[in-house]
Length: 65
Image 1 (cartoon, helix red, strand yellow):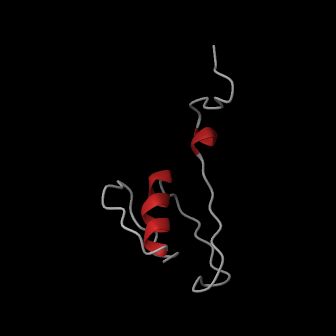
Image 2 (cartoon, one colour):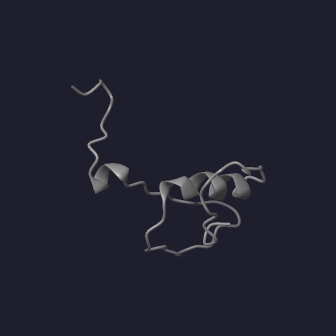
């Protein structure tokens, strides 16, 4: 039985995350069309914001920072 709000089915689509980056310092018209891990979002966003994510397990997406 699934819990209310639990939409994890275990298939690849349920593990897919997309990200759109916009704003000052973000290069325009750049599309990253390669597989990255969802755990890469935290180190990427924290570096972009000037924060420390030393305990994050992912890698910084260099296309965004």
